[in-house]
Length: 331
Ligand SMILES: [Zn+2]
View: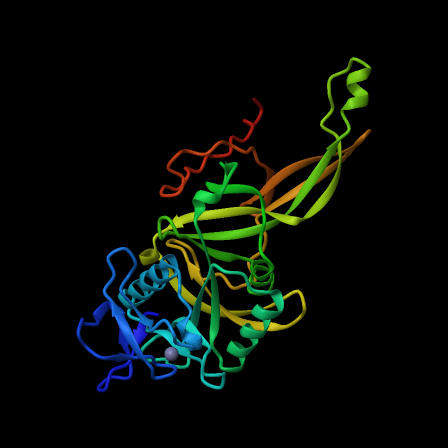
């Protein structure tokens, strides 16, 4: 954990803690040990025999993510509390990062760094408890992007395109019910990405019959939606320091209106949620099945998009946006 209390102070962060001082758990009051940390970030730990709900060992990546977020939000002038208790809830429920403007204590945002699994019912219930307290949640998926295979780019949008991303149930729920985007943190770089889920499809080729007749193979296929995956468009990377935090509300597909928070990228307007899809698959019926084309929305129009390879530095540098070459008039 990143916070503890002392005789004199109810809230101390590990980043400012001192060796030799006596620290206690904010939840159960048991003594905790300060670990200055050379490999892992500075943190507190229960004695091994502790049975406290707050005693669960956070991964080094999780502790680092919390610290990076807290530092960036404080640099933007927000008040930040780590491992904040949620009033009205059982005492063992803690918010990873709770933030609010100093002059508007009611405008609270809860940033939850989520690497482990959570059921759709679980995230829905936790989101509901935030709603009851007027806290706007931002569920941040922590993931080492080194795990991605077959990374490509959508050159007209300057975004990264991952086919067949196995989105977890809670990620799908958060994406679908809280505005239509899911923010990711690359655990390897600490940078943020805005994720957009598009339906993934699987096509069974119908080319065989054409080849037998000696004709050119057709692209036509029988397409079905592959429900175990989504296709993932990743917009970024962004430095935490360049993102603004914003609160709002939108209706989910279940008709419920929920409050949530998101990041606004530099140069972007405070567009109101829900954020519409900007990538889609279009199917064209052909003699033997269908063909599938990917389209992106540019200036309000859907345009067929190529898919390019990705540069080796894609995790730290945004792909350049390739301009769309429109046919010359009369040419
Ligand atoms: Zn404890």
